[in-house]
Image (cartoon, rainbow, N blue to C red; front, side):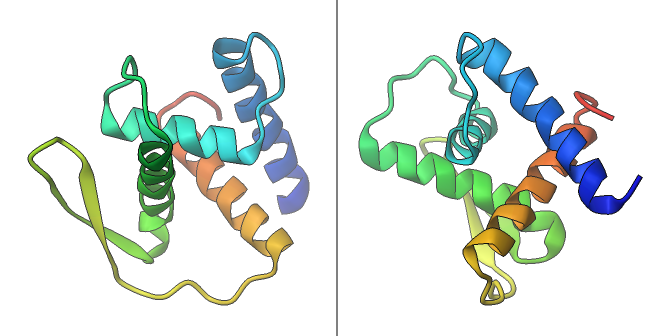
Length: 118
């Protein structure tokens, strides 16, 4: 199977897995999935988050997802338990479609690491 086709199949597995569990079958978009990963990484799933906290959760997820690519490195947890990352390498200038593919690849890898998909 071609790499693009494999990513597409695996991405659909991730979307279906999360949509079934968190959206009553409605299809979650990329931003919603990033948000859910941020909540998972913070480890406080039952908390109600304010708008700025939601953006911070998405930032946590992006840092965690791109850490294996060498763009970020985990630094520490603060006194409230929020993870902090440092930038190791600036992201290259990517077009919107390229950003989307990079994030989908990183998300698929995240779910493969956890044994949720193959």
